[in-house]
Length: 497
Image (tube, rainbow, N blue to C red; front, side):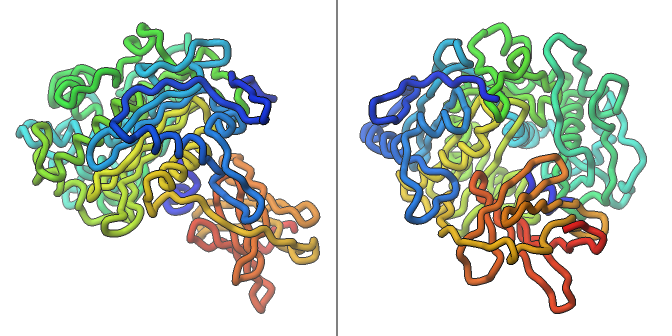
């Protein structure tokens, strides 16, 4: 889960590139599909990359290969949708250092993009009268039972809650299991049995009351789907989604993904390879999807057709009921909403050890994109991919952040260091100070060095790698507050500057 969710819901391996005399770098590229006229738009995208934060008067556009090298992402798949159809798709780079180039069929681990994929299959089951989203999920489960918690007869946990992240269930994400070691079953994981590396799924908040991002909720949904349909998850998803939408690469089968051999191996943020190539994620519905970018773009185009009554796979009424639902904290069934009217996009991201992914879709215009990266640096690169596509296609969303650097003396940041609390039981964020430099340290250990920027308010900063903004304010009583992700943290009195 990203820092936004946390606050709201609360040495380098080489990358294979070619160097030119100009100092630019390129990666191996293969175009997989392309509509007439799309080549020019693709070239604009590939040559106009910038970091997610552009410092006015300083930052210059770079080619995609250079940005991949700097973000230590060996391989990348991109597919772009325009007016409801695939405009182009391409792959870049290699499966791993010293390994073959990424092919159009290479599988990437797509992480949490598995969640909306699961929802769309469950939607078809509901339309076929085979699944009731509003029934108490305990009545659907055969293999596991939810322990007593905040649920009740008046407020049961339902599949609708699980899919919308409003079931009040913890935990959030899943770390995965190493190659060569034991891999527990989804039932063991949901129960917190021996061998599982996450706690059991429990209802810690009243169902329907709040948004609480939960991989555990999707694992329960996975088990409920299997129990009600009498099928293992992979054949169930193939029958109810992959085959009808004509997806040729997407799979939840770990063995199938391994047997194909055409796998983009994962890499840490420093570029070092994940031992064994990748981690196993038996929590399929939450994070266990393998796919190509083209396949996920094919799914998004079918979703768009369903929304507009042009699909033989999805019913328009149910698709609109799903995606036009009243947002909960800016989310609908796991999708984040960005923008308004004709500029509104559905957005979903995914990140696992060694991989990063994202997909976006404008339901009005039929514009969208998918990217899959076999490096954790793909989180930053993905933002740059979307920003470059926004420039190439004229989207108002996903534009890079443009700021002007400011000078700050050490005396100006005196007293800003310390620990900041976001609510009595919320997360704590540490601010470290070294002379005039401030660094945000999040509970998971992420460290964001802050750059001072010019703004109407004093003491405004940004993290150049992610675009995360932080603002400090001193009260008349000497109290210091930190504005972060739209939330306000208060510096604890006993914190050391």
